[in-house]
Image (cartoon, rainbow, N blue to C red; front, top):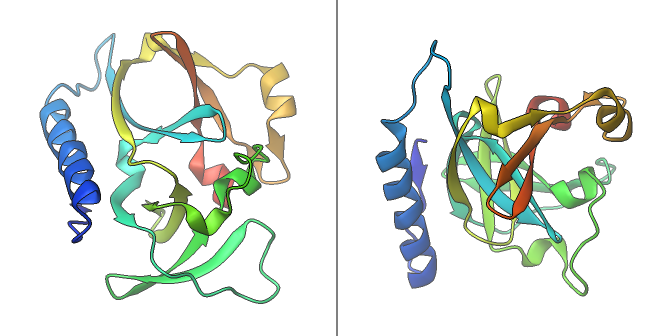
Length: 181
């Protein structure tokens, strides 16, 4: 994770610093090539469900900047924004995966944007809360089966990698590459 926005918003700064410390503390536990590999995820909420992405895809968390709408963009593209001098596309992930939005909430009311880098392309996704890091083992992830993938896919492919059971909730692990193509 390359950076965290340390804006003047005191709550954002506190939350961002906590995410940064958590990431730095947990990153040392990752191991590769061994049984029981640890995987670090960024967990966030859309609607009433929890979702996760690989921490490797998330470059930074920023306060949502002003977004310029783009004419004739796909329904889930909110527009473009200038983040640290780079113009990136902002995606409303709730619309993209057809999650029911919390009543009365508009997409641009989301306070934070996860800046992702996928195959050299930067994109932002809107989230309501500063996300948490989640450290799981490969065994904690139930891979998506054919039935789930049949319902959770579209023309760009399957966008569910699996489901992580954490405490008393289930977290949908997204395949962000398929989701934003």
